[in-house]
Image (cartoon, rainbow, N blue to C red; front, side, top):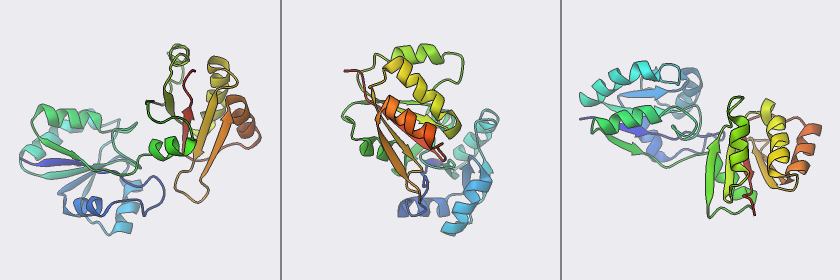
Length: 223
């Protein structure tokens, strides 16, 4: 019986990977990568020569059966995403579920996940929080925002730079202009920044200074 390792990779700074993660990537029989070109640069930096195979949201349904067969045959396989921890708004859940159903051991290593530093940096309550990931683009977006407007826990969102202004405007409309918001951008990278304030203030900031890079939004719960 083989084993599946879920291996977090850096979200920006290449130093943010554990020694154990590097060892597992070197010892594995196969690495499943969301984008082999992106991961190839990291693995080259880490001097990892393990064979890679593409595993992403568009092909995971087709490849899982073969991966399970290899694991049942005794292979050790590592799963990585482009950045952060697989299965957190990235591929990984379906394969993990299939492993559990086939009594294959799964070991998720601790490591980089974008929302944790963003949550801690926000200064908003983090004793209780809810992770929402990406909001629906169109269908179901309004319904979801109306539901979350009543959420009392701190809320975590992921967003792309070209949709940030729309999302912040939605927060003003549905959560209220004075709801506290924290936007962390380019975490661990050279131009990392966190902008805090009311939904209106943060919207004004990014209207004047269009954002770039990966974004995590932390929103205070309803009082």
